[in-house]
View 1 (cartoon, rainbow, N blue to C red):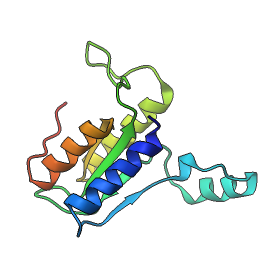
View 2: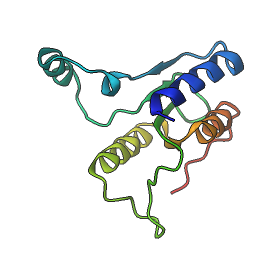
View 3: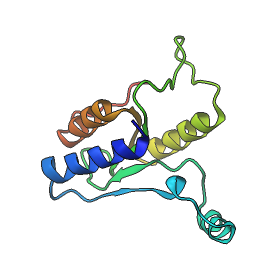
View 4: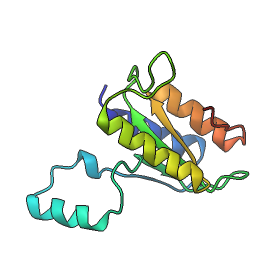
Length: 131
């Protein structure tokens, strides 16, 4: 299953389960841009590694929920808890940490089931980042 398929499942779930919630997917990484469009896009962005989904619903001490969506089974951490060596995942992890520091809930979600659980926990006020 492609990440884009997971996005569609999450969007359908959000529309059904939380019909009033405001959310947005960042699809720029999925798009095939011309060289000129890519330059314009890069110039407008301050950081690389921006998460795939933002749910604009403050809950408790958090200003919203950011999710970096991966295919089910994607390895983010090694068995010892260290982040994997993949440069792209490390960059995304750094962005999630920055967002947490700024007052947002921010996590990797590997597959639809994990994303659904994170969304439900967040929306019910049960979200807690575990280091």
